[in-house]
Amino acid sequence: MATIKCTKCGAPVEIEPGNKFVRCTYCDSQMYIDKSGAGFFYILEFKLDETAATGVFRRWAAGSVMAKNLDKDAKIFKAIPQYFPVYMFKRDVDGREVVYVEPAKSTSLPGMHNLKVPPGDIKIFDQHYKIPQNIQVIQPELEMMAYFNSLPGKPKEQALVYFPIWYMEYNYQGQIYSVVIDGSSGEVFADRFPTRGSAPYMVVAAIGFALYAIYGIVAWWNLKIGLIAMGITVPVIFATGYLVAKKW
Image (cartoon, rainbow, N blue to C red):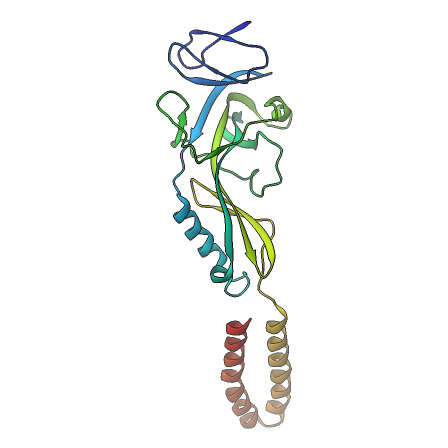
């Protein structure tokens, strides 16, 4: 049986071979152990419940590039709160402290390489923090050492952080899509989502361009007639664009 020092109080802690998590019997802190040694085990609290996360999704789905009425017609059928494991590396890069966050588990979920850990919100996992039973806790699979050679600068601190996310799946017009919502900041990550069709807008733009080209020729021949024609066409083009936006 090996013995390490607690990263919080310095007391000796015995670890069983193969164990990745160990709790200090003196200060009750929990640590994460891998081949690189012992590091703090942090957790970041959820700031969004399911209602708030659904609201974030609806606002995101109402964006200008999204399919029309996606925010209203998308049927969310899965909303799972998860603690996803990431490694937080604090590095000294040219005299500046830079924080890098990398996933501790292989995943195809979008955004897992773009998470940001707010330094003031993370908590050391100890007896004071209880994870609610409805939240899935995903176990790390990758070792910290897998990232060491790709990180710049000199190491200052490394830690395992359980990051709060909402994993959602929704149905839109018979197609299934997934989205990840940062349970702390509300940032939305999605690799694939229904978008608004551009063809109708291109048709309106092409017609408008062609008409104004013709009116330019007419104005060169008779300025008054050309300006009148342009004045009549402008509201028509705008009205057509508005109708296209409402329909598509």
